[in-house]
Length: 314
Image (cartoon, rainbow, N blue to C red; front, side, top):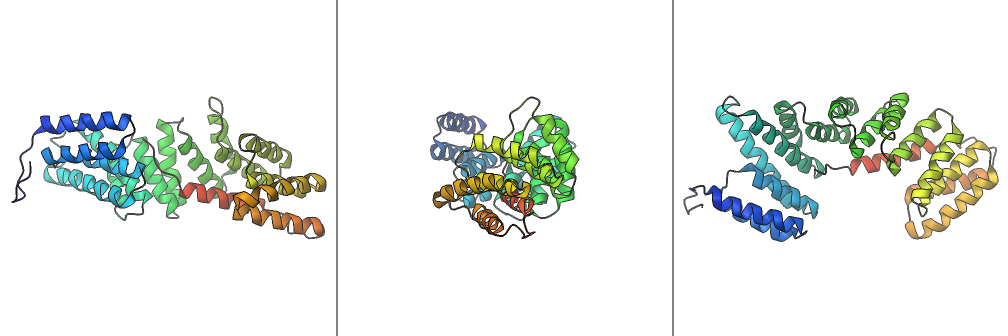
């Protein structure tokens, strides 16, 4: 407990009771009640970084960013203080790995909400445990969102060595390869994943963009049809397929898809879909217009938005 002079005594047993109560509440999806139990745990053990890490994570789950960052930052500060106080010589490997895992979570929270401490936090997590794929994935996200794509690829590739089954990691790695023109590598990492897993909509869009860049329109059509099977009400998918049809000279099919996209977009109001619809209709009105090769740009814009929304789910 903390007294008026900011001194405290640690009661790990009491803290553990509240921690267990919080776990039970989180299992029942009672997030705010669970957070309050963890705050009580902090009263009995105010230097346990795990309590702060968990509170930050669950605040992020309910999108209370300001609170999430406050607790994530405190988790980072406590671990940083512990490392600076004695180094790592007196810490068992298990605790070092625990520190790395907590910093991976805390750093992901700070990265997601744009806190400037995110990079140092995540780099520390990787330094403590270079095999921590979650820390490397989160650090890669930081680099990707800050325009350091080659650094991001290095971290995603390192993470991929230890986890080839996390779909968001596959997605950002394939996207990053695509973004720097490593088309075959982008296709290869998705092909390897689909041997044991269904492809997500994002992965299908990345494949479509890869194949479009290689001039393989028929495969792009097949992929976009698969997207539409997964999400038949996507104005963007219908508009993209319409543009591929137009590019291939299939004017009737292009017009049909664009009309579907236009109807769906009256409700969806997707600006990227609207841009494609207008462009294809203009081209159908004037087939001599050579400006009909913009699909990869639209796909990459859509994918970039999705990558910027990525966050780690532990």
